[in-house]
Image (cartoon, rainbow, N blue to C red; front, side, top):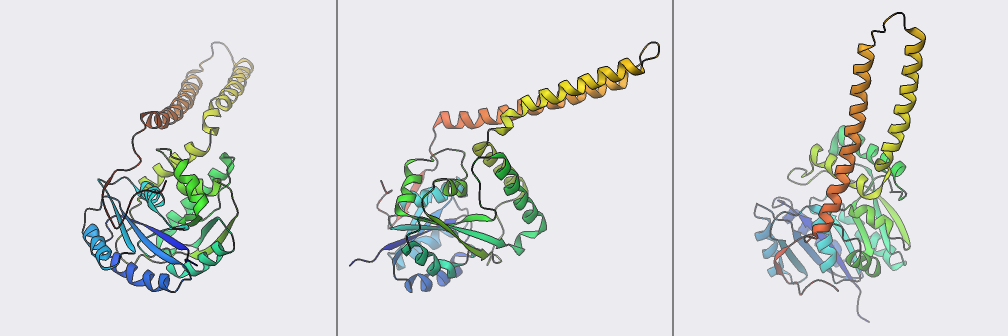
Length: 313
C-alpha cells in the first residue's frame, strides 16, 4: 500500500538567515512520520538570498519544491499558492521562522489519520510579540466575534492543517482578492479539532508585520466577515435624532431672552459631520473591496518553480 503524502507549505519572505535552521529542524521530523512528504516553499518576492538557498535545497532533495513569485504578493497569497500547488493527501501551512513548532507535525498526522479534515493550531502564548501585539490580537478576535456570524477561534494562527477535500474547497472557492485565510479555514466546516501550542522566538530576522500592517489586515478582515459597519448609519441616525430632541428640549427649557446657543450648535455640527464622514469612509472601504474583486486580477503570479509540475486541479 502506498503511503499518504503530507504537503508542508512554507511561506518565505526575506528569510535567508532562518531557512537553513528550518530545513535542518523540520526534515528529520518529517522523515519519522508514517506518511511521505513534500516540502513546498513559496518565495514571496524575497529581496535577499532566500531564493538561491531554496534552489539549492531543491537540487539536493527532490522532495523540496519551490514556487517563486514575480514580486511580493503577501503572506496570504503565498499560503494560497502553496495550497494550490500542494499535491499531498493533506496540507500543513506554517512559517519559516520556527515560531510554529515542527515538533507538532506527528500529532497533526495523528489527527489526520483519525479522520479530521481541519486542524487549527491555537496559540496559547507569544512572548516574542510583546504586550502591545498580544493585547491587540486578543482585542481583534473579541471584536470580530461580536461583529460577524462566523465565530473565529481566539489565538488561531496561520499554522493549520487541511485534508485533501477541505484544501480543494479553498482551491475552488474562497478566491477573494482581499482575504483572511485562517478565517476561511474556520468557515468551511467539516470535522475539525484544535491543538494548542506556544509560539517560540524567531530563530533569525524580524517580524514582517508592523503595527500599521496589522491594523490594515484587521480592518480588511472585519470588512470581509461582517456587514455590521454598513449598518452604523442607521444606528448613528437614531442616536443623532435622540440627541437632537434632547438639545431642542434643553434649549426650550433654559432659554432666557435671546438664546446664545453658539457653542451647542458648533459642537453638534462637528459631531454630526464626524459621524457622516465615518459612515462615508466605511462605505468607501467596502467599495474598494468590491472594486478589487471586479478587477479580478490574479492573487499571485508565479515566475519560476523547482520540482513542481503545476497547480492541483
